[in-house]
Length: 179
Image 1: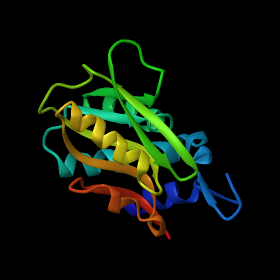
Image 2: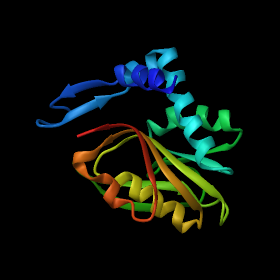
Image 3: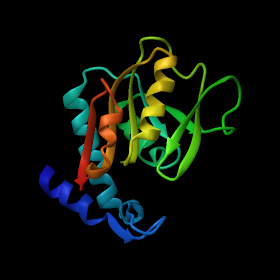
Image 4: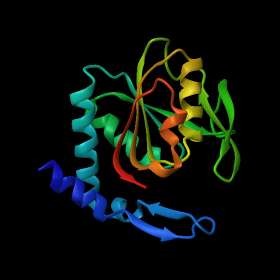
């Protein structure tokens, strides 16, 4: 049954050549989001993985912006809360902020300073792991809040870009892998 679900998810990932710059093959999840059965299959697979892997999770933390599409319904299924990790300047109140390198420049991420308590168990969710800069920055932010990061969870991993190597001591689980 899970092979059928995985096939359904894989079929709804659309490649776009030369986006956002020449030489890059972009993996688009828009068709996956448009297909309720495929999106349900995605959530089923992620939920089953987390339930089998971790007896206790306090929060799902989603990365701006596509992690916001996957994280909240996954958190709801697990009966836990969802935490936002946003681009700089988008969150009210006191925040922790970090600058990091992107594939095509620089960026900054923020989390509210009271988003998690020390020792709370968190899984970070996003749609894609490429070079790993954004995910590593998210790990560093949660580390500043003294959260226990259980895993980084992505739909797609672009293995040739070696992003997993930027996640020292944090396990990565990817549903789909491409070279």
